[in-house]
Image (tube, rainbow, N blue to C red):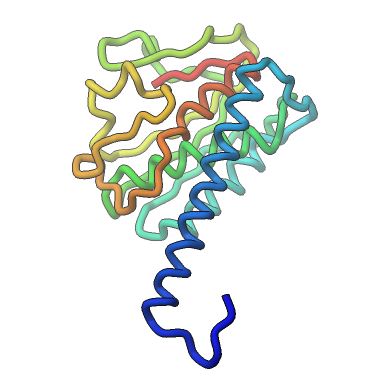
Length: 200
């Protein structure tokens, strides 16, 4: 848009809204295309991925994005390497960390852990839990994201990984409405494409 001199405030505001909405729509379209590719069974790349490094990078990004939270890493001494699609696995972790940051109050602690062991108990089998997929046999890589926030409302659990499912922002402490409701659907689809399971 060409305009002689300084743009009026109303024009500047309108242009910033157009840019914001076009960016949001681009992300939405990219997410929907990814889900369509995964639905069609298109294979992801299979290369060695250092999950420990992935956890460090994604947690560092979250620390910058939400400095009002406490971000904790629990990693084994040696790097954990799996075969998979590094870009998509990074997207999985970023989506999980974004949700943890968005739906917890300031000062919450979010812990990212990489190990070979499932959390204690029977993950994904309780009344207030969900499991998508079959837990792979050992040896396996287990990536967990936990926080000390209010938790996920039990009535949301059955549809948690469905497309366009969004938490009530009044209850979730979310400070923005930028969520498309596709983040956990992508997590579920990418993990399934890696022959893994999602446990909540």
